[in-house]
Image (cartoon, rainbow, N blue to C red; front, side, top):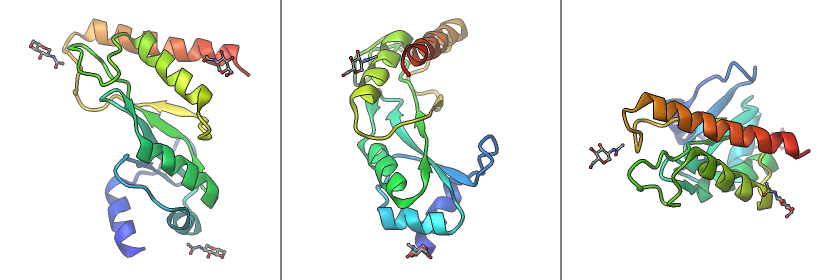
Length: 154
Ligand SMILES: *[C@@H]1O[C@H](CO)[C@@H](O)[C@H](O)[C@H]1NC(C)=O
Ligand SMILES: *[C@@H]1O[C@H](CO)[C@@H](O)[C@H](O)[C@H]1NC(C)=O
Ligand SMILES: *[C@@H]1O[C@H](CO)[C@@H](O)[C@H](O)[C@H]1NC(C)=O
């Protein structure tokens, strides 16, 4: 547990908007249900695994962490980093914010992983050009597509 804690201390933050002690979990390591249960016993209630990377692909490590965390008693919401495919370097080959959002919706809709909330994160400058207006448009297209799909589902 000590080494685990040392690792987590680096990435830990108290998520004040939730009002619980939680942390952001990069998709670098699968934690077991027992390890998550240990966090739970240390008064953590929420983790935020990254499930979609800025490279334009789903993170299998993050998805497994959602499953394991939920089995351990922890709540898991997720983090998605949309890929801004300005030079066609995203792994899924999709270009627009709408396409990226639809890809994520389609996956979440058909996945057995219990995904509830998705938090949008813009990671570094990877694949993001300096064109602020186009970047804003991309984010608006992305969030509006997710929003509309949410309204039409139950
Ligand atoms: C967490 O606490 C429960 C209840 O006290 C205990 O049964 C369980 O073994 C603990 N889990 C870990 C990983 O320490
Ligand atoms: C979600 O899945 C259902 C059943 O598989 C399908 O009818 C529906 O069109 C899907 N919705 C989206 C947004 O992909
Ligand atoms: C896209 O490619 C152009 C031309 O090679 C380059 O100048 C630019 O920095 C690249 N943009 C990103 C975000 O990688």
